[in-house]
Length: 567
Image (cartoon, rainbow, N blue to C red; front, top):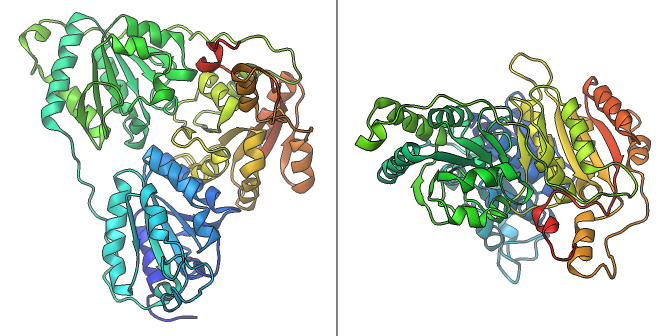
């Protein structure tokens, strides 16, 4: 028991003041005081215990992506702290704001043989050195009085896009703290006005001479700028493509949509770029996954960009840390009549009709066991309730989902393309479901996690967390008893002489049913059975699990494979 306000209490209250309702982590001796404080303030914050710290970090990541806010993860010292690294690296690469609260041994034992010492003293490794490269702020709290300022710095750094890490020795967490209530630092709106006006001039000129093609990225989702993007595209009568990790920023049925960009994309976007007067990149840096197959077209069209970071392609770039505000300003300028003499003579074009159905990438026929990727995703499309959220994992499964998925309106889509770690979707989907399991009208919102069996065997036991909290999540596992993308690479690039990536048959559906008798579990063998299983799951409360057998030799809709000389 304790009296007064400890550092741990101050932290939990600060989390609540930030509008965050959940802390994800794994308990342990050097973080238990934070959990104790969370219990005392349980009306403000819910502390969630995950099965593994990587998954806890991805829960915080998914929570942040779906709320456009901050995610919070905690871990104890030693192995618990180190297990955070892969998850925080994804958040760093994808610019997701996450605050990591990491327990440490008491300060009096640092450098004196403490269990799980990472102080950097007396031969111990240095946790500051470990976390600094994958965070925008990392500090060890050396005294209770230091915490308020360090917490403010950490939150401000995370809000710039990426993790911030506070290392918290146990005695510091337990210490009393006399300090004012935490006040979240203000979020300053910053944009490069000079270059923004230059981009607008380029847009006006392009609108006067031809078609503008917008490629929108995940910053649009992070900044809650979907409506502004749609209005801006309508004002320009633009064609719109989306980066692979941004399928939820522009609805597939809206006018001008021409599909996904890059290695899992659609030929309609390539055709649009070839005839464009301007390629306008909004909230995407166009990494390789977003530009593969489009390189020649992008090299032959003028490019302009608006976003937090400049693209990886030559373009006139205007910085913005809030695309909702910036796009609204750009729309206002276009509507105001403040245009150059040439562009001002061109009337605003009426919005055209929606694009026809997109052309799927042609994949070789597959005659192996199980169901085909595209057919499974199409069946999922037909079963998704309005407003559903979808989290896709890595590999052939992820490629099929990115290419074929048609997300319902008001749904969120996430795929981890920063570090691309297998198993990410399980934790991220759970974290998101904590935040979005209810719609504004109070009705349940279902989340779908779609992953391969390789990802399932890595981190699928986080389903236990979903069961504990009765979260409305349907987990769909494509089971091909393999790391199938690695098999495809062995076949295409190494002469199909061997495989390290085929495994003895496993039966995830039967296994989950035996392990969790109350879990709604299905293992359909046909598309008809799959459709029925998905309908049944959608009508249930709490989580459900669907295992679908697939062919490990099926080539997914992934351009580098489809164009490989090894085919």
